[in-house]
Image (cartoon, rainbow over all chains, first blue to last red; front, side, top):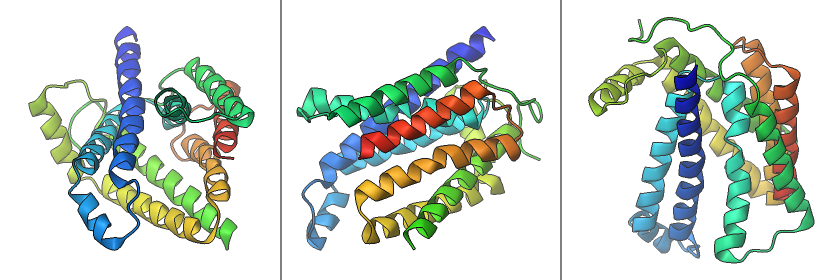
Length: 133
Length: 120
């Protein structure tokens, strides 16, 4: 159980960070591009390439996490990325956070902490690690 | 029309996630994180229909969300799709047989409300 907890903590952190960073890089690359020509240009932007690569990494980490953790555990816990994105906007971009948004950040944090007190896996393994039939 | 699209977004994305989880659980827990072993995992996953169908469903969900954004405000679209947290938890409980106790339900509900408030 110790190893499962440790591994889950590492992968849940990777999933959250990769999602936040991937979206951040994509938005850097796509910002202020309304015209069709600049959209094509955006596809060759290093920020878009970096964003897409980080999001591919995000998906692979999430798949690995789902190979042992419950879906009903992973989905709420990794939603902490929403709160982190809002806080990053305030810290790095000086964005204003309204009272309603602070309340949202607090509710998400409470929800994540509550789900984290439940067991990571509640189903029996379908089969031992190995290939698909 | 707006609520129909919200339903399509939530259902296809929850179903896609549930299928992805099913595919991964059928594969079995990943123990070995050496590059060679991970390539082997990827090879097996590419051949699994669960993952292919889940990606198709997630693509439909993304397309429906873009369509929703084109006819509704962002401040409607994002909070409305927070219902995904509820539909995913329901599918995890009834399709995948996960044990969702009151703490997990409350946590998922709090997260969904938080996402609504963040998007307003």
